[in-house]
Amino acid sequence: MGGLGAPEIILIIVAILIMFGGKKIPELMKGLGRGVKEFKDAQNGESNTANTTTTEDKTKV
Image (cartoon, rainbow, N blue to C red):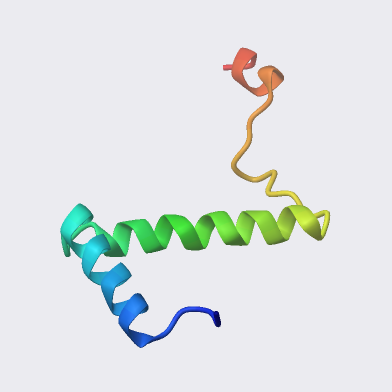
């Protein structure tokens, strides 16, 4: 009863490739990486305010 071995990992990788195809995997990993980064930033109390706009910014146009 100990964790995942090589056969299980290979089976999981093959299933993912069948479900999403080879071209979608890099996009999925990029999105996963962004999510992990945002989660870590939120834990550290950092926020990314450069990409957010307030309602004041929108009304000044």
